[in-house]
Length: 282
Image 1 (cartoon, rainbow, N blue to C red):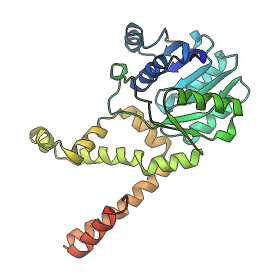
Image 2 (cartoon, rainbow, N blue to C red):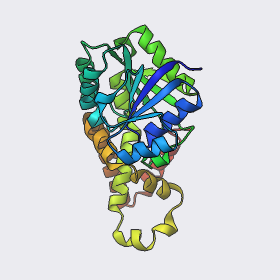
Image 3 (cartoon, rainbow, N blue to C red):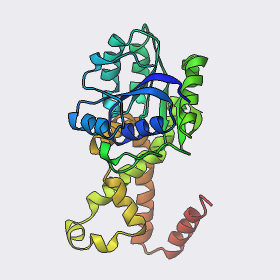
Image 4 (tube, rainbow, N blue to C red):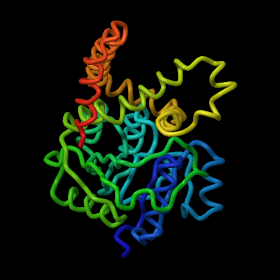
């Protein structure tokens, strides 16, 4: 069922292109406009009918009913400032960022005297792969979408965006910004950080000579996460640094304790600890 005249997707990478395909598949908008500074990404998206219209300058934007930021989080404020100067009719802005931090509050300030309403989103989807060519048509189906700080927007904005995500087959869940960033720092963000550290710590000889023999189970998952986009994860780590540092400190403490047990060959303590961890999520 068509609900929008024009949806503007800012950033036609893997996530943005996958979102476009989901919008088209569910017939949610008459037109999808894609913005990107990478002309090859726009050409690919047009050629493969992922988008209907391509722009490489924000100033070329035709009035969008809905704008979704799908770029690295460090670009959000700059892009929002540009959008605030060219979008002169009522519109809804959201993003798909994995961390909110100060950026989230600054966007509200930028949009204070505009006709753009803002409600942040975070789809719990993704892949270690990047680029428009790695798009997935069902990426958002049956996935959780966090909606951030519902009380800060109007009921009509919330209802519209909530219905948008549900139209893609997603499930929505409300969180505050602080709840969201704390939760992500303790789960997704620390998991990616530990994956990068794991791969960094592997001797180059293992990578060169033995890695193909070992890519099973847990090692395969660590390797997969470490292939994620460095720009995106640098932005996330810095944007959510205060929460992430707390998670790192907690992990360092736990590693230190286990290291001591291993160095002392304390079999009973190690076994008790591992047993305790094993049942933690059962």
